[in-house]
Image (cartoon, rainbow, N blue to C red; front, side):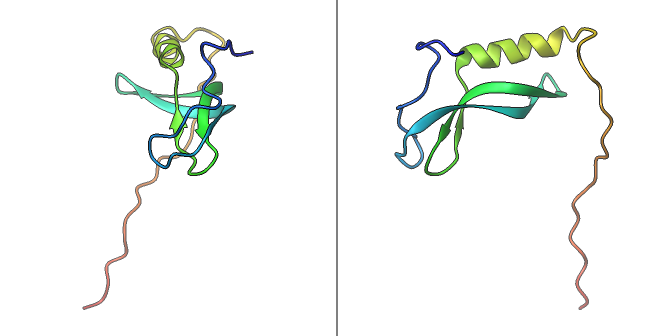
Length: 90
């Protein structure tokens, strides 16, 4: 459970002026050149435009998690595919 200090519920979105609500989502982060996926990340989500807001404490914890991945960390393999446009006939 999130403390009132970490809650973003009721705050205003800087992009559209909508209201934020507290949610938990699976998010990917690039920390020091390393891609990690973290489940159940608490964040604020704008109910109008979908912009995401991460409390500073959450980002600090993610950075710490990236530095010390222990035996609980799963290392799934996933294909990385380049997105290339087709060349059009001239």
